[in-house]
Amino acid sequence: MIINDGAGSGASAKIDANNRMHVESVQHNQFDEAVTAGDGYNFNTGPMTLTSANVSAVGYFKYDGDKPFIITEILFILGSSTGGSGDGTATIIKNPTGGTIISGAVNIDVASNRDFSSSKVISGDTFKGAEGNTITGGTTFADTSRSSFGTVITFDAGHIKLAKGNSLALTWQPPSSNTSQVVKIAASGYVLTKDVDA
Image (cartoon, rainbow, N blue to C red; front, top):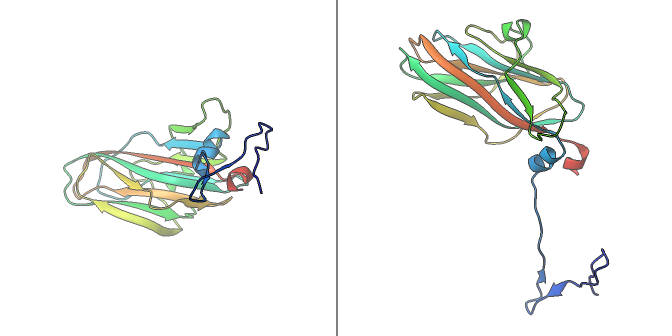
């Protein structure tokens, strides 16, 4: 059997003395494919200044698209704390149902398509929080703590899949005695289209 070029060049596949076929391929992951199709996104809440050591809801995303959305990473970008000592705690909450971050809806600063020529926008709610904002309902999906600041906490151990109607919220509790800490939330992800999933 001879494997010929289906494009009509007349070339045949090369088999070496070890019975190995010689090939050259290009590999893309699903995120890269989605970006090429205009279905990849970047998110950033912009800065929020937290003035206590209490828990504040700092980010909320409810997805309303028909095809699944895959979150590839979530970043807590933490400034230094004034007056704070000890640990601060970052939490991701799965499918929350209410809270002042939702009822007082303030859109995040950046929800940008990673394809600079695409006009597609994400389908859903993307809200930023503020000092004292609350989130209710849902269950804890992940959490972690840090005692050093001016750093980034990255949740990227595995992708998160959101179907239509799914949501997540992010909270940050600054360290004890904090009077001022700037926090930003950033994330990236893509719509899992049929072409990308094939």
